[in-house]
Length: 99
Image 1 (cartoon, one colour):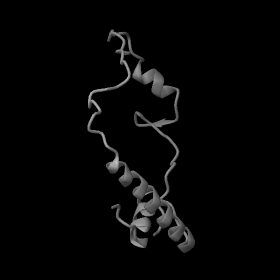
Image 2: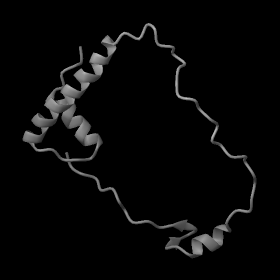
Image 3: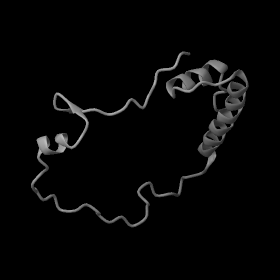
C-alpha cells in the first residue's frame, strides 16, 4: 500500500522544486500525488511470472563511430560572447525563494 502523503511531504517537495504553494494547493496536490502513488503501487499486483525479463523491442546500435576532429578555438568562441576573465556570463535564471 502506498504511503499517504502529509502536508509536510508536499511542502518539502515544493521547496525542492522551488515553488510556492498556497494551503489550498497543498491539499489539492497531496490528494493528487497520493492517488498517483497508489496507482503506481497497484502495478505490483500485475502477474509478471511468464514475462521474460530481457524481452524488448529489437534494439539497434545507433551510435556513430567516434572520429576525432578539429574543435573550436576557445578564445574565438569566448570573444563572441558576453564574458569576463575567460568565462561566459549568462543571466541568472533561478532565484531563491523563501519558504
